[in-house]
Image (cartoon, rainbow, N blue to C red):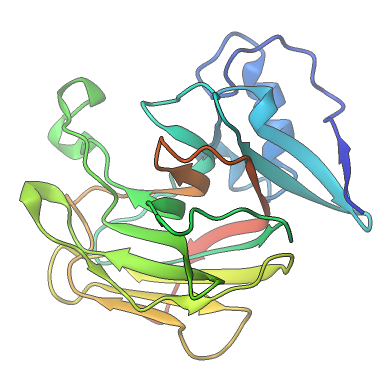
Amino acid sequence: MLILVRSMVLVVGLVALVGCGPEGSRQEEEAYLRTIMSGTLIPYSHLDVPSRDNVKIVLEKAEASLALRLFPGQPKLHGGIRAEVSVDFPFSEHDSISYSWRFKFDETFVSDTPENRWWVIGQWHDQPDANQSETWENFRSHSPPVSLGIGEVDGTLALALTHGPTRDGLEQISTEPVPIERGVWYKIETRIHWSQISNGRVEVLLNDFPEASLIGSGPNMNNAYRHYLKVGMYRHPEIESENQIYIDDLSVSEWNGG
């Protein structure tokens, strides 16, 4: 049975648990982040949730994880329905980076069948190119050029990879989905060789299986600046179910296999 507990340092009255909140908010935010990642990754990371109702620390057999929750009527954040952790790990184009974490859905997780509207549990976004003096004020946002989405296929929950630049109306490619089970922890490792040209590559491995379950080839960046990871849930605004995803053991590192 899952026991939901609050962090011992929930002392600041925030409306949104994001890194740019009132004085003292970063301390609370870091308390959540330490549950799922090492201290070396925290400087690059933030919670992307509209309120405390969207995030809890969970104990299961003395192991702590982070539960990210979406529910009907929740506030939008950055224009969307989301509960995520973001990691802006530094890299340069043509670097190869490994992104790894564990995730689980409840056994009672309600999908969006039969509509199967978009529902993302991992995404990599472009951002303003600081080397070109761009800022968010003059930056046009795009859909993520790499994302991991869920849906239901023949009564089974499934995971698929979508990849390819989204600027200038370019069309992306989606892989055939692979089945996943409710109530089961999965380790997912996404290895990305970042590139704006044809040598870009994405490999998604599940549960340390030596061969990739999902593969994408070709350009995977919208611009030359590093793209940042968002893990959790971000979904179509008209989906009305209440859902949780559990996240743990989030890590990002250089990968030498690219």
